[in-house]
Amino acid sequence: MNTIELQVSPAQSADFNFLEEKIQFTLSLSPLSFKWRIDKKSIDARKRNAIVILRISVIGANEEFPAVHQRQFQHEIKGSAIVIGAGPAGLFAALRLLELGVKPIILERGKDVRARRRDLVEITRNGIVNEDSNYCFGEGGAGTYSDGKLYTRSTKKGSVVRILETLVQFGANENILTESHPHVGTNKLPQIIANMRESILANGGEIHFEERVVDFHVGMDSIHEVKTAKGNSFQADSILLATGHSARDIFELLHAKKIALEAKPFAVGVRIEHDQRTIDKLQYKCDDRGEFLPPASYSIVTQVNDHGVYSFCMCPGGIVAPCATSQEEIVTNGWSPSKRNNPWANSGIVVEVKLSDLENLHYSGPLAGMHLQRDIEKKAYELGGKNQFAPAQRATDFIYNKKSTTLPDSSYSPGITSTNLRDLFPKFISECLIGALQHFNTKMPNFAGPNALLLAPETRTSSPVRIPRDKELLNHPEIKNLFPCGEGAGYAGGIVSAAIDGERCADAISEFISKKKNQ
Picture 1 (tube, rainbow, N blue to C red):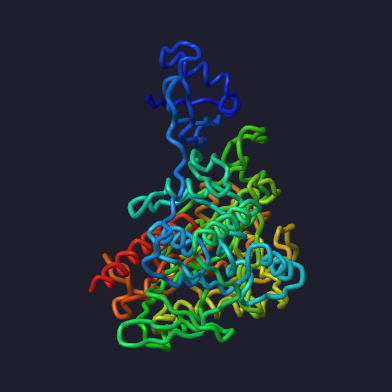
Picture 2: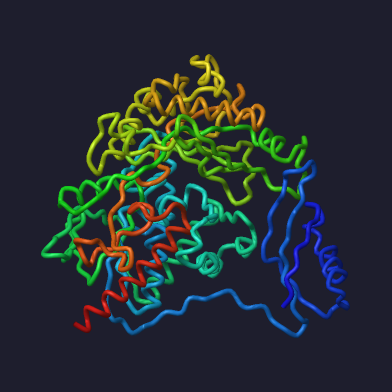
């Protein structure tokens, strides 16, 4: 197999006849003597004219490329595990458990992907939040209806390719295997998640929807029973806790049970929204990106007052969504459909919150960050005028401490209310945001201009709580059959990294059960 790199124009990257001739010339091959495929595709827009960089594998005409990995499940069951949460960590853990001969029993507080849609409509149209079924809770987790980005830097702890190939197995487009920043899209993920569910059920797993966990029976160093709000009880050899970063009731339950938790740094800020054409012009340095370049994205970071400030979850051609998990709070996030064809671009611009910041604000204990998040979200609800209206301000007005007299159009469906966002945040967050916006504006002119809209707050960037676990065994140091997992436990940040962590915990559970059986 030969691997070559080609640098071509956007139009040439879509012309397979051109690419085949280029490969033939580069490797001095005769026609029809080879097969080829694109392994990786990325865009370099640093110069005046953007180029596309392709990494291509070439084999002989009689050879075959390796097939996409297919999951193979055991049907000889050696034990069971309760999986709390059906987000990416929980679902990929369940698939891996079945490969290892362990029966997963999934308890999901929310509804299946199809039923979830009705509750999302209630939030966006009527401002009504179902506390168990929303953008954060339900089958597939937060990523299912809030974007489906698959980019991750978590390459040392598991196989990113394995996760992507699994998504392809269950219906994702194969282009996620080649794009440098792969993306499924909120419109495509629900069916993929449903296909994963059917595979889990067909191979011996259980899934129970609308089963919110409300209690654990803890004895000695183990959880012996899990109880739900419906009064049902579940037992298994081990417990995988994959509830996501917004399951505050689980953090409070663990704290009440005196199960060790730790406060951890996180980030808080705003979601900034632009006309997508503004970002295209800034990034591609042209008035019209044409049909062969995707809607432009960006990634920016700086330091202000010894705090990191950075873009988070950038959504080209996207929508700003209401992601509250309780009625009297406001939370913003963003998502894009697979085509990324909405007229707006949005991204979080968030400020690092350190443990020392929490102390300075008089928040203490392992749930300190969670309480700060909650207080900001509740204040935003009051400032927005309730009914899920988001506080909003033009970026220039925020910088110059002026309430906006008018606001640009926004993709945020419930509605927006003109607010001075300095009234919402602790002073250090506002000061860091102002300094960062001014800096970003020098790098990307008009990034913080009068038509850039700030919506607030962006608070659910990551879990403000870490649930400790053994570095090797991955179980809780006190509760030996409890395996904290994914974003909610503080060990992942996104779909792919959560899926990888779910698989790692599944491997650890299998080993735990085997050792227990052999004692």
